[in-house]
Structures are given as structure tokens and as C-alpha cells.
Amino acid sequence: MDLSVRIGTLTLQNPLIAASGCFGYGVEYADLVDLASLGGVAVKGLFLEEREGHPAPRIVETPAGMLNAIGLQGIGVRRFIAEKLPELRARQATVIVNICGTTLDEYVELARILSDADGVAALELNISCPNIKEGGITFGCSLNGTFDVVSAVRKVTRLPVVPKLTPNVTDVSSFARAAEEAGADAVSLVNTFLAMAIDVETRRPKLSNIVGGLSGPAIRPIAVRMVYECRQAITIPIIGMGGIADARDAIEFMIAGASAVQVGTASFVDPFIWPKLLDGIRSYMERHHVARVADLVGTVDTGPAAPERSGA
Amino acid sequence: MPPVDVAAEVTSNQPLSADYNVLTLAAPAIAAAAAPGQFVMVKAGLGHDPLLRRPFSVFEVLRDARGAPTGISILNKRIGASTELLYAARQGQRLACLGPLGQPFVPVDPPVEAWMVAGGVGLAPFAALGESLSGRGVRATLFYGARRAAELFYLDFFRDLGVELVLTTEDGTAGERGRITVPLERALASRALVTPGAPPMIYACGPEAMMAAAAKLAMRYHAPCFVSMERTMGCGLGGCYGCVVAVRGPHGRAHHVRSCLAGPVMAGDQILWD
Ligand SMILES: Cc1cc2nc3c(=O)[nH]c(=O)nc-3n(C[C@H](O)[C@H](O)[C@H](O)COP(=O)(O)O)c2cc1C
Image (cartoon, rainbow over all chains, first blue to last red; front, side, top):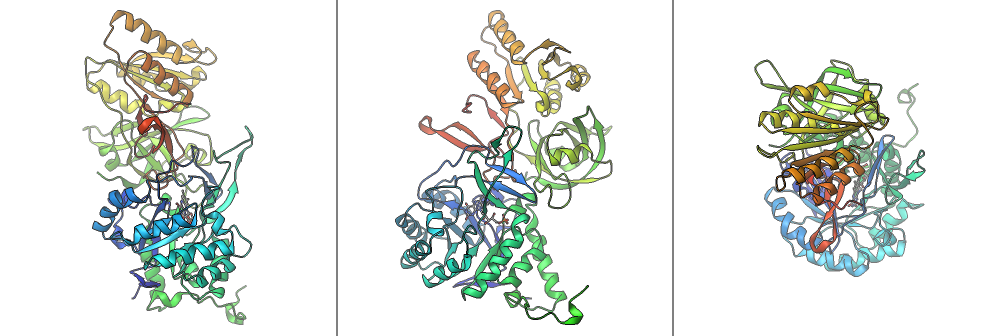
């Protein structure tokens, strides 16, 4: 049974990646999760400099999901390389670094610095964080901006470049196309949906930032639809995510067109979810006689339903 | 020791009032490793709604007749979907319980005295702490405030440990009427006159305004103080950065630390109370 998947020049041993912002810098989990057993670890979004992020409250639970407005608190790329990367390397994690900038030059600088570091497998360009005004979302919400930031980063690195797309646009697939044309090796989607929750007793927003990003099972059907639409629009691989909570959910994304998947919110609920997801994928493959997990990608059957399969 | 995730059986559910209950959970591994002030992350139901686990202080460490740890209890107050389910939990049901997590209270030894300051559900870490203090032979006092007499719980438990009680209620139905920080301040002031230079260790847990007041009083009277911060948590493991507390950082700047890793117990003079 072959669980490996390819993302550009990078081969992941399996399609499961810890989602950025939901797994700290990976080292927080080193004693709980065998980091080497994951397809990849996408670390918390990094700027060039340290950032303090938003004040509490930063998260609030909503039906089958949660809102977050962390504001990209982080230690900055240099401290990451000095303090976190060595342990990730020692634990043999496949490290995907999620990078954020306020300007094109910052993305380029981050890409340069990380390309020289030992132990980085890929760059995920966060042009989709809904929680900071000045951040990459201005790139992620403009087709030209997406094209420009991807091509600028492409020019300075040999690492796989994976822009992470926002769902907060009318047509995600046009952004996927812009990314592909600019030379992206893959795209990842979705980041969180811009959302809001209000305490009706006090009439105050439940988040200090007023608005935040919705994640978790509540968003899964929308995310699956977006992956499906992007699959029609581009030929580069898609890393799919949004509400995956068990193996069936992961497989659904792959059938919709994702070559690999990320899991965020569900790993908060069950930090030991990874081997369970892998076992579930394996048993699905056995049951359906799928030899290579990559063979599942984009196999959704949208032809006319055969009468005997149409159900009640 | 890394935390463990246990499908813990609910061995009892004791209602204390219309809003409060104590759940006992069979979890020997967590009980054996837990120190007072640490917390567990509990999933209240199956499925996706409610989705996240909730943090609970370890209320008591339960032991069998031979003294071997068998489980823990948590003090629950109905305030939302998860705590509603936990109020109604049935004996025999299993709850996913991850722990122990976070930083415990820094213990003291005689002759230092310990003053615990609790407001409402902020009693949560103090049964275990009271037990441990009395085991160390530390003279302890519990300053405990609630809305009304019927919401002051476990008083006999603390009396049996030899913990002195100072009570307040908002409606005056038990103890002094008003805030618990009023008798706390009085006690600090009179003690400073009688035995200057021997301040008690202050441990506080409750509403943020109460903890801020207790921490500021402690600073004024040069008493060490630790508070147990309450934040909504996503994971309890440092993964999400959702539960931060603002502390004094380098160069006096505000710095956000994760209360799940740096806390929940933190030094009161490090926190930027607003
Ligand atoms: C608390 C939190 C923090 C996040 N931080 C980041 C981040 O730093 N960079 C990023 O690209 N995405 C971030 N995300 C988005 C996730 O990586 C993911 O795209 C989204 O949560 C959907 O997946 P899920 O439903 O499995 O959580 C964050 C999500 C959450 C819940």
C-alpha cells in the first residue's frame, strides 16, 4: 500500500499535514506525536520580526466550529531557525514553513532566509490570514497581488512554493490559476472564513479583534466545494483542508481533488488523531482496493448516476 | 511526564446547587501525576457540537483505601454548552480527559503561611492545594467569596483539613457582605503590624477583577502571590495561541504568553492587569 504523495518536487510519506497555526512550531507536540510519522508539519505563520498578536479573547466556540483571531503572534523567522528548527530536524519532521509579510519584499526576504536554512521542506505563503489588516490578505484578495507575490518568491527559492488561498473571495479557482501561472508548485486551501460572534447579553463581540476566522467541521462542505472547483481549474497539486475530523473527511477532500490534506481544529480536540487518520485511510484503501493513495485524487464521479447506485 | 488522554469513567456526579456540580472521574494515571493547580482538558460530549474540550482545574485527587491515586474530581459551573452537558453527566458515562497540563502552584513550607483566595468557581484548584498544604504542615486560610451562602461549597472539607475560613457573600447570607478582597486587605494590614517581614504566600483564583485586586494587595504588602488564570483554550497544549495572558515583557513591553504552558498558575506581579 503506497501512502506517499507528491507536492511538486517534494514527496510526502503520507498525505497528512498538521495545519499552520494549529500545531504551534511543532516542538510543542514532540513528546506526544511522532513528528516523523506525519506527512508534514506546517508551522505557525512567521513574519520576519516577532509579533505579539491580538489581546485575549482570541478564540470562541461556534456550532461545530470555532472563531480565532490570534493576530499571528510569533517569534520571527530568525528565532524560529535558531530555536525550533534544530529540534524539528532532529525529530525528522517534514517542515513546511508558513510565511507572512506586509510587503512583497518581506515575502522575498523570508523566502531567501528560509532557503538557506537546513531542514525546510517547503514554503507555504500565507496570503490569506483574515485577522490582520496589514498582512498578506491584501495579496490574497487580488489576482495581481497573488501573481506578484508567488512569482517574486519563485525567483529566489528552489523550495516548493505553496500559496495558501483565502476562501473569502467570489471565485477561489481564479486565484488558484493566478498562482499556477506565477509558478507555484501547489496551492493550499482553505484558510478560515471571515466571521463574527456577538454576546447578546452585553452586545459585545466575543473576540477582541471583533471579527475572526471560522474553522472546524462547520466549514468542511464549503472547503470541499472549493477544492473541487480548483481541481477543474489547475493542474498543480492541491493541499486541501477545512474541518477534517476523521479519515472519511480526509478521503472526501482527496476525492474532490486534494493530493494532501491538513488538519487543524480537529487536532485541538484530539491531539492523538494522526495514527487514527492514517489507519482509517489504510482500511478505506483496502476496502476499495486502492493500491496508491494518490490514485484517489480527483476521482469524484460527477457523471449521471447509474440507476442501481442512485439510492432511495 | 507527557500528559495522557484517558476515556475516564464518570464515577459520580454530585450536584452542589442548581448551577454547580462535582464530577469524579476514574483516571489513575492523571491522578498520580497531577500537582495542585494543574488542569485537564475534558470533552463534554461525543461529536462536533460542542466541539472543543474545556479546561478544568484538578479539584481533588481521589485515592483508594490504601492511598493509591484512582482519579480526580472537577468543579463544574453551568455557563455554556459543554458545562451544561457536564452538569447532566451520568455515572458510568465516559469522558475524554487529557492531562495533567500546565504549571502547578509553587508550594510553601512552614513557617510560611498560605492564604488561598477564591471567588465563585475559582474554588476549583483549592481542594487539592489545601490538602497538599495541610500534608506539609502549612498553616492555611481560605478567603472564599460567593454570591450567596448556598454557593459556598466544601466548607467542611476545608475545616477538616484544618484550614481556617474567611467567608464573604454578595448578599450577606453568610460571612461578611461584600468582596472577599476586603477581609483579605484587612488581614494583610493587621498582619503587617503584628509580624512585619513574614508575609504569607497568597494563592488566588476567581474572576479576573478579584485576582487583579488580590495581586495588587500582595504587591503592596510585599507578599508573594500566584494566580490561576482562566482563559478559553483551544488545545491546552501550546498549539493554538488562543489562551494568552499579557505579562511584563523585556523592556517593559507587553508580551503574550500561553496560559496553557506558562500557566494557568502565574506570578501575580508578572501579569499586566488592565
Ligand atoms: C487558532 C488557529 C490559528 C491559525 N493560524 C494560522 C496561521 O498562522 N497561518 C495559516 O496559514 N493558517 C492559520 N490557520 C488556518 C488553518 O491552518 C486552517 O487553514 C483552517 O483552520 C482550516 O482547517 P481546520 O478546519 O482543520 O482547522 C489557523 C487556524 C486556527 C484555528
